[in-house]
Length: 132
Figure 1 (tube, rainbow, N blue to C red):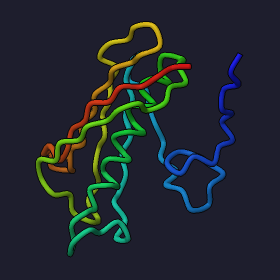
Figure 2 (cartoon, helix red, strand yellow; figure 1 turned 90 degrees about the vertical axis):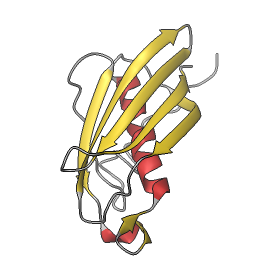
Figure 3 (cartoon, rainbow, N blue to C red; figure 1 turned 30 degrees about the horizontal axis):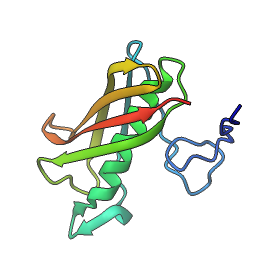
Figure 4 (spheres, rainbow, N blue to C red; figure 1 turned 180 degrees about the vertical axis):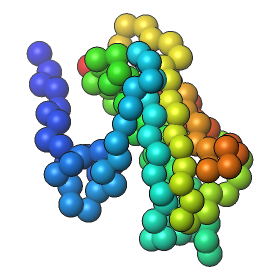
């Protein structure tokens, strides 16, 4: 049997032991969903005052992974797509919502959206996760 990776609490996004991590806190409004919010630090700038898209993709990915966690599943990203709608600004507080859309065998399909503090859609994503 393949050994599953162990949660050592050093995850860059949510690990409480990673001194350089984001220390994101997640809530699970219902089974199959996850939510987090964060204020965007200035060091994630891509262009003047605009947040780097890779940072937003990471937040979407992590929140979708936590939607899987809400089902008691350890899952790993197999495929992800991101659609950007509006630039996010450095210093803004953003809200990330994710949910499990479908699960079958070891495959879990998810989706997520990021909104700014004015409830404007910034980015959305779909991802397929593999549960060992």
